[in-house]
Image 1 (tube, rainbow, N blue to C red):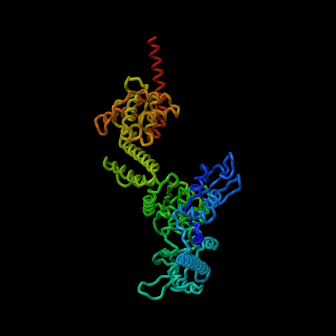
Image 2: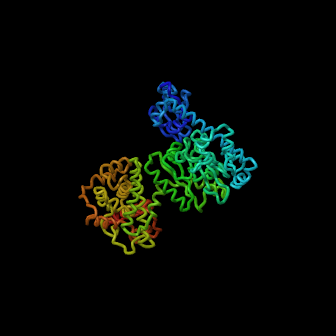
Image 3: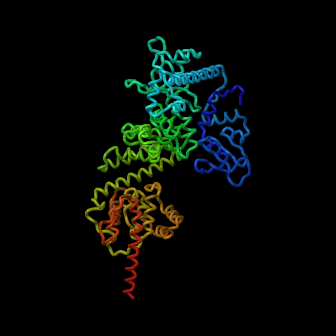
Length: 605
């Protein structure tokens, strides 16, 4: 480590915020997830039972066998025998952060940034004082009407910018800050045509914006007059502040999140929503700064927890915001990196809901959050009617196009499987409705159960053909889901192939047979292995149509003679329910077949 390197203020905290401890420590310790922590054997002692814990939310590790604990930097120091500066430099390289050399220019930059931080802090204290002064009466009334008293003002460092063109500037100049520093801190505006700078924030309730260390770097101001334009005003981008890289309340929220069992931070749409949630005991709430979530803000969210919840109004604008967030997040999804959505009803935001119905109502709404894939599915499903084959094909094309943007191969494949399954189930529901009130064709087709062919293993050949020609599984998914096979092992085989990963392309006999053996279905595996090889069926040909027609014979009909009491019961509304009922039907008919077989044997005797 060169002696000329100097660690700037905030560099270490930013470094630790960028690095997940379990990633670094996991390279030396085999870790296993246990709740919100990772557990493994101590790298410092020769222990038999794991007592080494890593907590990504709190960014710490603790080894109970040796008593050693700390952050990721101290772990690298302990395990690699490095100095503090060497450990910082090593981790900075991994995080893509440049540790600057202490050149004269860097020293000047360091000193200038330090002054800008001090200027922002001085302004924050000034705004806090003005809120409590006589001129802050209107601002205090506004906050009190929103349910925020003096204790909340202090907790969130709320303030008031006087309705004056130079009062903030004059105060900061009296605190020994130069005019250029005040402008560079985003607290004053320079007129385009020249003239004296003036206060950026005037007559507004002030919300301080902090960085990952909790240092004030910018402000948001809410106008008090009905005609205030804009209603909310943020600092302009400065050397310290870029609105697309910061989340309001991030440091406080991350600290609060460390003591919860939640999956991630909660993202609200505005300052007041985040504050209202914190005051209601939901302290891990943040807010972007008046724009759609950026990739940098998503990265901040995922550093805190793998499953942040985006909370939007359930109106049209909130839905559009949710859709924009999906587009931003999809490419970056990973096994432990996704989003959930809480869409509030009635056009309410979190602040409205909490004030109207209390904190428990907000917590209940959050508990009903839905995963990203659900919102994506709804968006594409509702994009246009699905009343023609072309529009149905368009639905699948849109779903696959969205999934294709996911960079992680495993997550992309999982999305493709799930979206295809949802599409198939939805189209099945549509076709069921079109068939009549009972969900079955009005004109029954002579079914397999009406023939005198023995019930044992009937339908096996159709399933084997689907395995040997995997595209049939996608083509006939709905029919396969609804079909009733009398033999339990044939039905088991059907259940396996329609739930098989990448069913339309990746099915093969040996893999399915192995799965059946491992799950204890030995006879089903024997049936599959002993069935002769079949000729491949080409897509969209006559053989495919004949296969579908044959498969239709196994779909339940509204015919009591075929299904006994089962046909009189309410028809279930999804493939999953059909599969659950299938066991009851198969057992009843197999029992009847056995009785008939026994009766025939008695007659022969």
